[in-house]
Length: 452
Ligand SMILES: *Cc1c(COP(=O)(O)O)cnc(C)c1O
Image 1 (cartoon, rainbow, N blue to C red):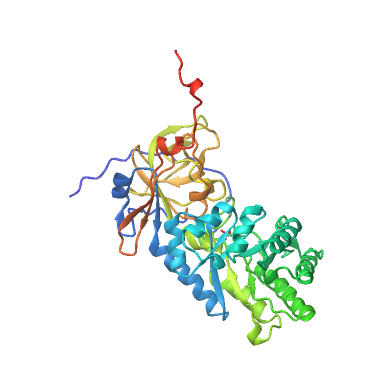
Image 2: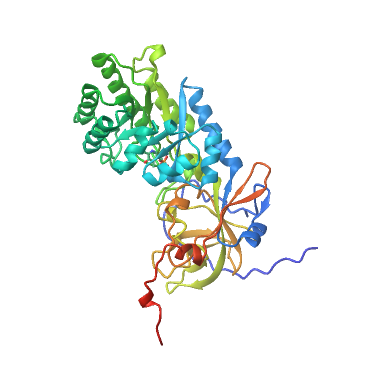
């Protein structure tokens, strides 16, 4: 018989408060393997902490999203939101699945070009496009989504100078019944700014208005908001048709679909509350199909969904550094990864699983990262089995935004590996080194020497 492992006794603190009517979920099954690879082996080979991407999950999730939209609407195109995760291997999986690129800066634009995305399949969004970047985008025939009037006038100037008609869309913001309203990007629908911008483009005739774009928010839990947005964009398109006899070729609904993560303070688990792709697809396609387009003039539907396509495919593996008792009696566990690489810990109650077997006992704990900063909290309150030094954990659903918003603060950023369809492991970003960090530093010679 296998010798049972010793586990120290725990004292359970009884918290007075409302019972959750759904009872506590026993989600604490150990997570020992990811796509056939032992967590222990991954950490031994690639270090701790370690980000792991599952190619299988990316492709499955993408196929599910594509099915949801293609079964409801005849013309659908996805464009991968680079800022959500722009590690090249990840972008390439999406491009292999047929996604165009959606970028919001010159840096991301050049990344997409370097990834061999054809210029006319790059959507250039955002308020920050320099004159040089706009020139490049015009010459590459990219889809430029205009954010404000200054950009619109600059484009007219550049179009005249280059003698090319840029392919453009305008970004429209609107009231979709959700609060807070995102009105800082693009032109407002209700106050007439959007229609004004459309007239300025159509009457000037230096640019080709191909599309209408909206990105109404992020982690949107109400599919109905997309229905309203799609209706408003469709109405604009139909008004353009009426006034100028011109068909708008695409409606771009942006991204913002919720992933299955649990938002902080949420009563229910994200897996139980986040709408699925079918619900978003239903709201959007019904709106456009019923708006009044004649059959062969239905616009192409573009989607720039980011987090909902990639969150579940990402894991963060880490190791326990130590345990301590806080002065108020709470147990604290200190991990070797912090908010520097897990930015989304500020918004989500990330699900965390021990990576090794344990008994049935659990205890409430605070999970801290290793930074010398009070804000470095991974989970303010989590129920986990007692973890010991060197025990390993798996943080789930970290594929969106962490590998782009991470910062090199106090510690170096860890490696990222991808597990392919055959369950083989590939390093897709090696861990940083002191050399890679100092690569851009220049020490003036006069500061070189000192005597202590
Ligand atoms: C960030 C962004 C997206 C992707 O948003 P998600 O919330 O990750 O789906 C899409 N379009 C634009 C314009 C964006 O800025």
